[in-house]
Image (tube, rainbow, N blue to C red; front, side, top):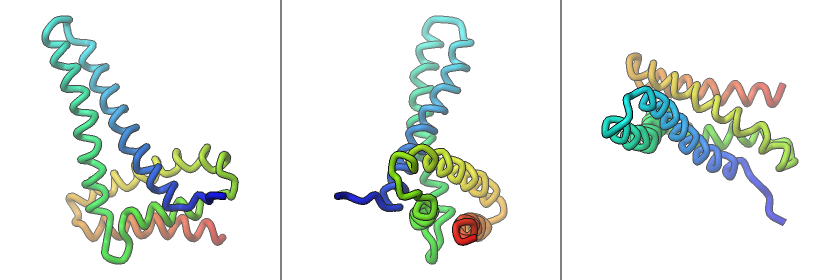
Length: 141
């Protein structure tokens, strides 16, 4: 029997986050493109929308990953810790709620990374450690 660990959920969450955010950026870009008049402009806009979705999204993820991680707590260790604390023991049940929660965690980390670009990397690292700590306290309490 194979057991699913927090690392498995963390890896799948990263994959889903990058693909979902790429898809979301692509859809939003295409919504703007379809307001353009038809012709070459629209075709070029669709190509750029696809490139925007599949280039910008991974770049944003790497920026969050590099800015949030610290020597004591990397970004992936934090995702692993959070997903380990969210497991219910029943894989089908856990899958239903863990990925939306991890997506919200990523969006919070993305927000703090944006603020951290102004306030400094230590701000982002402290916020990431605080977010992981928050999940730890909720699990124990």
